[in-house]
Length: 221
Image 1 (cartoon, rainbow, N blue to C red):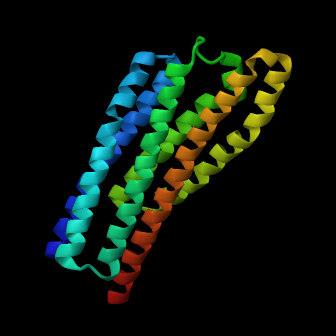
Image 2: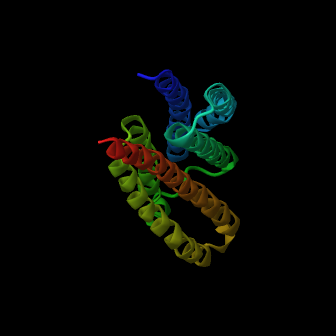
């Protein structure tokens, strides 16, 4: 094993630590939203700085790797992909904080169950969570088939997001006094949809790296 191979493995481990933090933030923010749990939402907000700190750790180690090894070809592609993935994870962490903020600012009780069902809110959250889990596994296993599953799953997120304005518009017509609340709810749905977009970006970066690695291996055969 080359020395750079062991360092690449270390970089990936630092990155997975950040991924675990972000996954926890998403899980907790979704649970807070579903249960109208303001205490859990506050915990998400207070822990957001941990995600930002871990992003700096990953970036620092990537910079050190470049300075020490002057990577080329596949190693350079890996570091570039990792930096981009880290940035997308940080943004997903921001969306978790935004969801938690929505829960805290929500003055009324939990989102109406019938409205939530019409919006497919639970399905959307479950899909976003599954996408993030699959993408993490894809990185660890270097499995592009999992990445392609993630990209296909994003279509559901887009469909739900496109349907939301019609559902919310009908609700406003029936209950005009809820207009401001419905606008805020659409902003929430957009945040969840953006989690899917960012996870798709991550999947594309993994494919970018893994396909190049496999191509190099084939050339050696």
